[in-house]
Length: 166
Image 1 (spheres, rainbow, N blue to C red):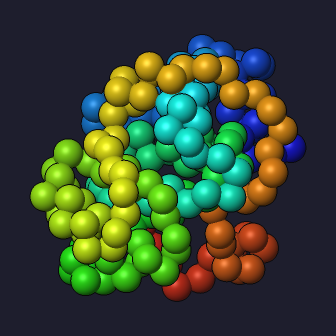
Image 2: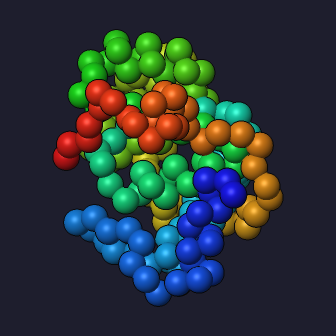
């Protein structure tokens, strides 16, 4: 089973069970699967395909989980950027990973515009799942590669030296 199918499996067996929540929203597995479909369709409509890098700049929120699974559905690779980095460091990260699209929270609009210009990144958009529904074609094919890269320790179940704070 691939990463993008985990939510679909849960949605099939327990659609009404809570799947994801943050301070803005709470989603069941069925709702989460539908958002992932819409996001994947929107990204596909923007030309995101297998192997392409999609960078994200923003705070921790439920939308990031949707973005991660949507990228996995397309075989694209999500590149989360640390919002605490200085602009030159963000530019370096964008250039180094080869991102073709930056998706960012509205709070980072000025920073995103500046780093995209400096990095030569042609496209950026504000993370808003509703904004991607115009390209809501169903994307249900088997996937071609990883959605994220992870150190071997994480793959083995022992992610060391990393933590997540809000």
